[in-house]
Length: 186
View 1 (cartoon, rainbow, N blue to C red):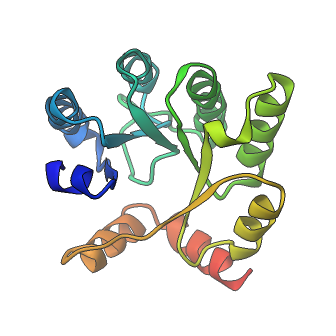
View 2 (spheres, rainbow, N blue to C red; view 1 turned 180 degrees about the vertical axis):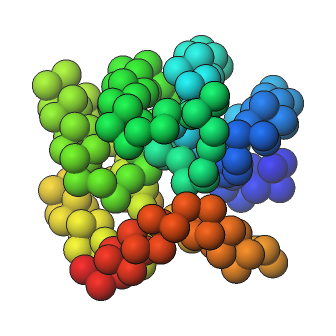
């Protein structure tokens, strides 16, 4: 992270399943205390995420908000998509109002529209946040948002373990396979 800072680069720590959430946040907090060019991902489907975002906003941390891709038990995560979506909107609003350049990571047009509307209604400048999407998924929507003046970051899993990471995420929730195929064909 120190070397990345020397070159003006930012590092984001991704989030895995709920069993790793606390240790990931502990690592993030330790790194952020030394160097602020690091951010973290928060998953909207976890019940704990609202409190995590409150704490991260107080730190001035840069957060990427995603829905969450793993099959989690109902004891830790919203089991219904509608509840996850509702929480996603609530967390997005917290990040846009109080966060430090949040990444709104979604391919869901309803979540994108909710973000656009919230930012517009509160006169939040478009350079205070960015949309984030996976490489190769919904390129049409990525380009449309950029044409409209929004910032867009394309997320590319990278490293020696990128393939097992993608396979694990697809296998964890079979609906992800259909989502990727549909998005790639658009």
